[in-house]
Length: 357
Image (cartoon, rainbow, N blue to C red; front, side, top):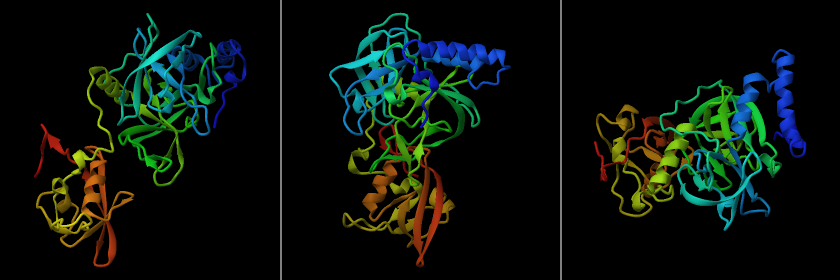
């Protein structure tokens, strides 16, 4: 975990230190990590970051996190968490002004929430669903109220690092799988700290790149992840919430029916019982299953890292994926385990009807 020096100082002294770092960077030829444009970008971003206080305060449940201003009138995007399960959600701006926020809505898939405060002419980021993705190696600044050490007009903590990769997120929180399965920035700075969820990620030119995620462990390695939701995903979730569009709960498996394996070119044996094993009866020609060399009588035993023991279980695990996610099946053939990659998952519906080959 990382605790910036700026937040070890009380009140306005942290702001003085930020300014001193900028000056020292110019005096010493930019050799300090927080210098010149990077420091200016960090200060600009900090003015758009909000300290959020709500429910929690017991073991394992922090009562604070971070948010990002995305409209001049006071819309705030943040991580959906137990902190927001409170009658009063307090928001503190960079200059120490305090507001009481109301929850406008939530995106369950992205685990993103939108709060609103009554403000005017607030510094903010303008979100766009067409925001370009940053590439691996991009130098970034991560701003958040990690450990809750900023309570008033103290500036939030700043960390610097690079984007290590942009890959589909596969992670867990305790025994529960994370709802979001889309692309995420994997960071080499330690943002997986209490208070960091909902924090702001920018590049060294100050461009908004994304929102810091919750404390999660990678699946199946169990390693703590430091990651951020890309800006375009944040914008899509924000717009859907404002438009009142329903958010698909990841636990709702297509009304219980799950995903039809025929979309992948798989005909399974007749499902006479709830626990009928997922034996392949036939493989449809010109399909993903045919291209991956699946055969009749293959027994499917796992999808990715998750085991399946029935046809119903296979359909439900497929339904947890998003269109475009990679489909990797583990099979038993002639007593041996083989692994086949079927490529990206096709969409399940089109205008409300199932799309079959």
